[in-house]
Amino acid sequence: MAQIDVYDIKGQKKEGIEVPEDIFGPKVNTDVIHQAVVMYQACQRQGTHDTKMRGEVSGGNKKPFKQKGTGRARQGSTRSPLWTKGGVVWGPHPREYRYSVPQKIRLAALRESLNAKNIAGNLSCIADFNAMQKTKEFAQVLKALGLTGKILVIIDKTEANIELAARNIRSLTVVRPQDVNAHDVLLHKKILVTRPALNKILDRVKK
Image (tube, rainbow, N blue to C red; front, side):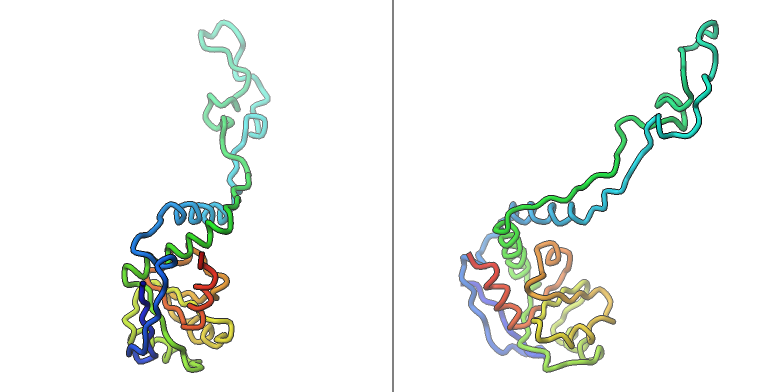
């Protein structure tokens, strides 16, 4: 069984949580992670790109030169795709990129991404924050745990005061266990989760 160490706010180990191998195993299924992450990225695309076809480009109503006698290929409009500043052939137009994958794949991707972070030693669990409300105190906890870089903090809904203490720390994101996904996990270098939030995540991702 895999084990996740639980620390206090001073960085001292308090206990360990044993996780069954069917949740956190020795290998990572990268296929489900890829499917979910590509879906999340596609859903974030605005799809507002647009190019003008020859009928949408202004001007070009006058024939550029006479039909015959010039030795050149015949042309009917300067807004033809063959001309500079002409229309665009098969260019992109506004469209919807959003699509969905089954919920089981999304949960499996979350489980496997957390497993990958745990194997790499980038998943930390803290017992609680003791009703912390100051940014300085929160920064000291991160320093005691040795967390630097881009950090994702997963807290339980009863710890809303932590959001106020953490919002002024650069490169740090706070989410709830019911909202976190594989894309959020992989986007951050370090993952810090509270004990209550970890229990809820394990309930979400169990097979």
